[in-house]
Length: 123
Image (cartoon, rainbow, N blue to C red; front, side, top):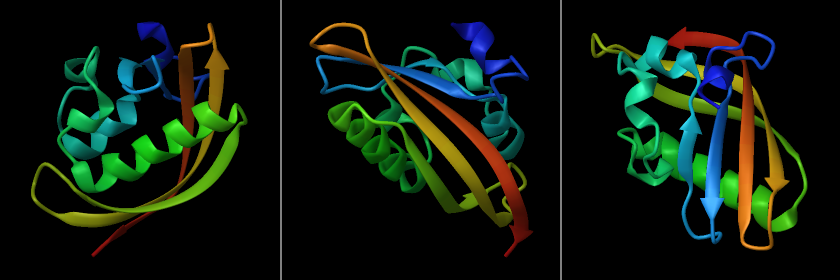
């Protein structure tokens, strides 16, 4: 699964495992997150997505993943997020994200997320 985070065909997307529907564990994470945050994406593997460092960004992400898992339907979202780079500079990032649920059992779902950055703008 870790190859998904590096595969240009996949778009540098993420993959999470939602065991029992109440947790959202990172299996693969996009390298683009590292580029903007300065933190290695590999550090997040195995962690619950809600425990990642940028809560203002992660909480809405978690909601979208849980919504897709519960509805069992793909979602296409337009995201605008205020982010902070490693140098402390803040910027707006606008991107489209395709969220796909994959149910593997009645209690387990995998969610893959494929982002496509459309705009970066300094604040």
